[in-house]
Image 1 (cartoon, rainbow, N blue to C red):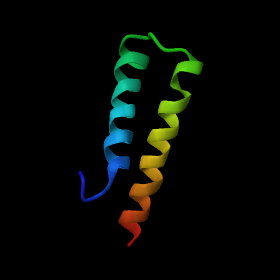
Image 2 (cartoon, helix red, strand yellow):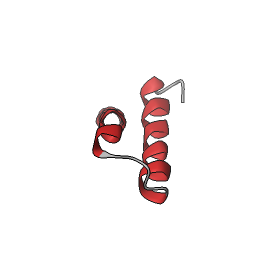
Image 3 (spheres, rainbow, N blue to C red):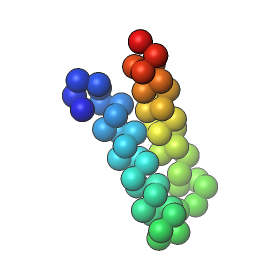
Length: 53
């Protein structure tokens, strides 16, 4: 993942956290998830850039 950047690690970890604690465990509130969603969106934007080149 280092070849792509830290955005992959951060985005993937955030997505996993949201999936487990937000979906399966239902322990997160809207206020809890905002920063994690931002990281996932960043990962998607950066992945689009890589795939378009």
